[in-house]
Length: 251
Image (cartoon, rainbow, N blue to C red; front, side, top):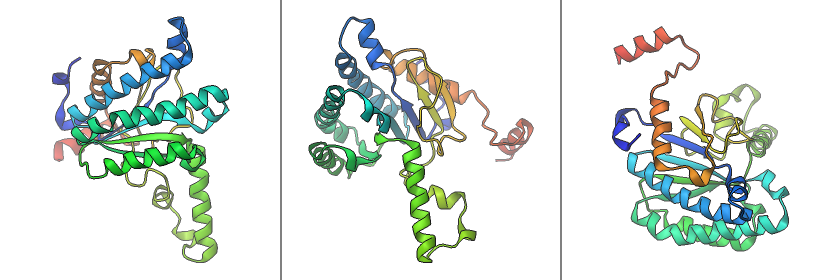
């Protein structure tokens, strides 16, 4: 597929990606896991450029999960430095391409040097009005949902929110993604067919695409393929197909 095969009138506003397979890719090439992560950064750049070029509004990348803190300390330290140095290096190009950088997750758990340097990158791109590139860092959906429950409980306890007022909008309004639409499309590379604690609330009606390729081998053509696949699906949200067709013909 090429970018010309994509219907620009039916783009997913928000694409979320689980970037899996860096370590296995490196091992299959007889290299250390760190080599795979470094090559994965090249793919991040490629897919960010592709998303921006095609007209996607939001791109969320599962960069480091709360479960990843359980990895060997040396790998965690390497990942922290790699994320920060890569983002700093790419920031001028993000600005050039009008891409705004943001993040979701338990950032307080990250090393101080990482938080401070990333914050400068966020500030440097804050004026950009194109694609929003969101990094899920020290993130898990269960962490996010527990925090939302705590916030709601505090408000109920303080008397600023009643039990009868709690609905789906109440929960959604206290999630880390409150300023973004839910993902229309979620892609996972690496061959595994699961969502791994990623945006569990938000992907309730997302279209899911699982790609066998490891992340370093994922190309912009693969990204275009996923969007074309998405555009070939009928999103019913619990309705019948006939209802959806009738609504589309009346719009």
